[in-house]
Length: 541
Image (spheres, rainbow, N blue to C red):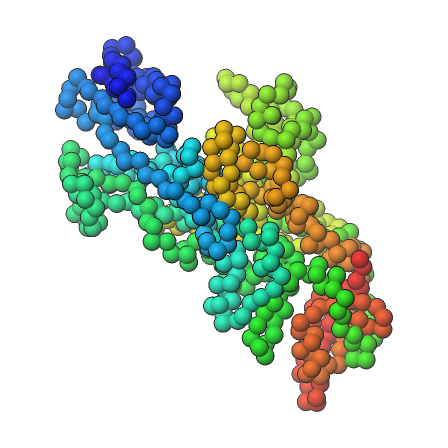
């Protein structure tokens, strides 16, 4: 066979190789070494003895013309076919701006297609060397083959957009300092609904997917009229890309991550979303000394603070999870620095940019490799602490193909390919727009740590771990109050005016002592006042 790539010609003789696979692998190595930055993969058939395996080579930075002239000109197994390379210039969408409503950060999910798509390498929202969103896929002659593709897309929605839409749906006006937080403005919410859509073309023209056209390729494998290709459905319905949970679950999960308070004004049909730490700091306080009965002890405080746990942790967080974090022999800033360590088998390295521990592990007949041992982001020990389940889970960061990106293990919700997983939970990451990787190639970058796409520490990013330096300050005053704090009770006798004032604050004063209300059960009476049974904590700052 005569292979020509941009005028460079090489002759390949089948007799020089024992199997068809060996020749393909040698040809793939040759294409990668030409210096055209070709993205080369081999799609292996189920039976390696046949000749259905194929090479797929996409150009990235250099326009490439490739021809293959087989000895048997009629063979469908040895032909070079022109593929259309599709890329998006993302423009403003590659800037961190909640006004865009959606973004397409590059991330890694090796389990997206539940092992049903062997040529998919786990990269979602792939970007080329020029920072363009890359979504080309090979076309096939049969519909059954067409569910093998290398590239897929998933848009993520900004958290603030979802929150506003929720209250718009409830017909409640929403405001508050929550929307003014720079951290909050950067948060994206993960979903697993891909934009995959298999297009049927007849003589090169897109056509309706009727039963006849869909099955024509499988019924007549040698036909050349119909082609089947995953091209993605860009009629993006935002409702498909939010977590499948109730509004109550969503708002509670968010509250339990950032320690929020929803202050409802029922008369005006408004809600203000505040950080509880602002309530601690605020000078305003509702003095109920004249309306309160005796303050009594309900439960003696034995807890030593808050024990945070994550709801529905992702399997990737459980890789090597041993409960107690290991003691590392090495600590490095980035993943590449770990790879050059002269370490011994079973030694541990902590990588700051990923907030993860790795163990140098034997790898059968191959060289030992670093494998994940544990992430810093773990559940607290709740034995002697107030158990607090956080409904929102920050996505951990991984490193793949020389790029740092959010990583997860979760199958898709995509009826197109008979995958129906709707249980994503509330998973978050922070989006920072286009950033250059270690090779100075830009891509849409998101992360849950303070390390950028080059794995350098930066003050312009946030650590999303509950115990991290950016989220824990929202909890510091609350944990101080709960640490050894007694749960107290008090009955409050309130008129309608005081009830309204109490509905907008949880910080009260009774005889010169400040309290934070945990729960408040209101009982109406036949008189001009209501009785409120309040559970309180004495504020400690």
